[in-house]
Length: 463
Picture 1 (cartoon, rainbow, N blue to C red):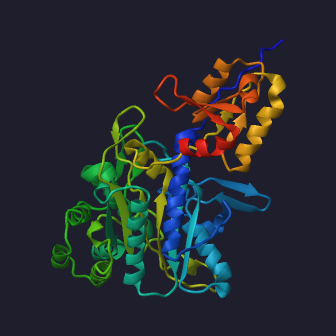
Picture 2: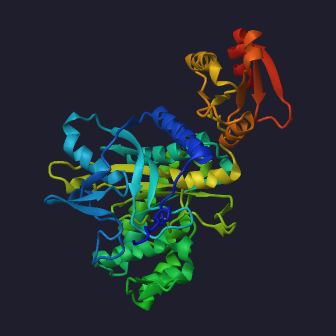
Picture 3: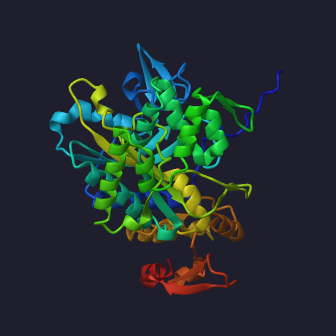
């Protein structure tokens, strides 16, 4: 008889289980994020995890021969469907489908999982939660884009980060697009490769960007990324550009109308932002151009100012925790709809990865109080206490195996993280007394005796 093969209980790379403290902190982060989005006047929207592949578009992949290589796509009857890789593409479809019923400018927020079939590691997942806000419609661009910066900053502060722990960097894609046209780069795929090469500066360094601007880049694992095939002179001009740090210097170097338009839009954004409370958190960084192909103006990225380590203790760069920009043509792909948009996305799981390391988020444990079973004949009394606790909104449970001794029941409660164990035998019941054992206390015999009438008040004091 052939021996049954045992399964290995593990996950595919890029996916993660979250539970206990990590999940509790994530839920608190999401609640803080959602509350702040609402405070800024954004209304909730939920769209399905799947979209028609043709509608969601291919704005992510580097491989033009296989533009859907970075997403999870499936054949469903006679149509191709794709798991959403962000929340902006589904939004564009929703607006195009429902614009007659919407009030513009349409300000929406969405919080949900997205999927990307890409290399994982360093807090990069293939399934992760994003929290987005977007403003759709004809508005004052500087005002809308500044509002996106403001909501990023206030939301991260609301999540527990301090002002000196992050900064928000802005740019405008038109600045580099003007330079690209000056350099006579006219092929759209080549232009996108140039933009993505610049966008990877912090990850791959100047040499890596140079390789991506030219023939190809080979990373440490041996993987090859095809470059933009620029000439040495073209690549040199791009490399000189990414070294420029301020707007005044940009104006001296770039004279083409497209770049100057991007510079002007950036200056107007900064002027509007100065009217709010968050302007000292915003700086310019002209290498920020965003990797997604649909951005066409204002761009924003948010980086942490503290070190983050992977599970092995090695310091890593986890990238931007909140990013986005302006996409004035994303919705115009659909018939009958043409609305400009701007928005941003917070990588909730990436933020969670970082914030767990500095313990900035305080959360209240929701673990239950455990009622221990000393004698099976007292079950009616135990259930009476259980019902009383639950009726008063106190998380509680009765141990589910009366054959286990008290020591094993307390071991379970300790491992579970229960704050209190209720111990009640026949003598306590006769005397109308209940023993509360405080399990989270550092003292060995930290327990009190209370009456049943005072049970709820005493427990609320302890938890």
